[in-house]
Length: 301
Image 1 (cartoon, helix red, strand yellow):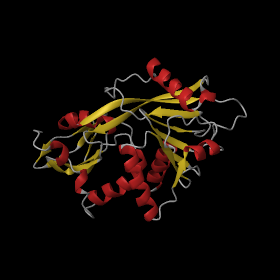
Image 2 (spheres, rainbow, N blue to C red):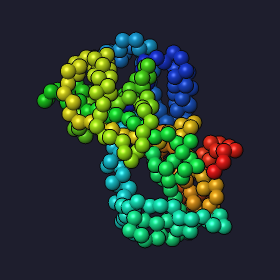
Image 3 (tube, rainbow, N blue to C red):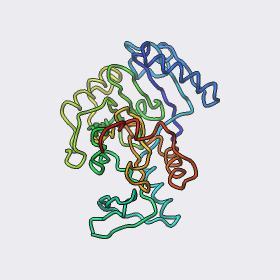
């Protein structure tokens, strides 16, 4: 966690988002996880004059929060796993046959078959392709991320003078200033077009870039003409109800299915990982709200 503050959720806050945030703020403060500050537009404009607060009602400031660097975090987990004696392989894996309510192994591209007591499939946007019965319940979408450059020596749009932010407007834009010197990051959390995660092109679209620049003109006018320094095309793995999945395969008790990240899976990774570990080792059953049954209902497998 970086030592940066989080300016969370300005924009159209007087409707459902506003009620939700007021409830969450009360719960966080009561639980001792705060502090959270509710700021007026005047307060915001005084603290962060580089942001244009047109059509904003109020904001929430969370000074003890920040952001996680996904690539660095994944590398840290991998290194810790290897240090503990784990083995990492990069290969395509195919689920094995199921008999007597158990999967008989998984096959790698090399032809090698791996046998284990239990198997955990956390396949992200490929989950519906690996297990076809999940295809109607997992929707991979295309999400574009942009990093804009700033003038040398201009610290107004770095972590030094700006918090991480989320804007609950018509589109849910969010951003990370600085972001390990990669540029001023912004992205639209609105679910993008449905894609095939294997064949999807990884170049940004002209429409996405135009929308990002339009947003800069609205909220960060000094960056309206900032050069695009870097970009990414990512994927969300959306479950039908946007919630996580952790359950046995319906026909194989030694297979666990984990997914449904829906754009917020990574930040919950440590907590979800602990729940998965407890479930696989038989220490504690997973929460019922993560079950496949809520999605599958009476659908044929």
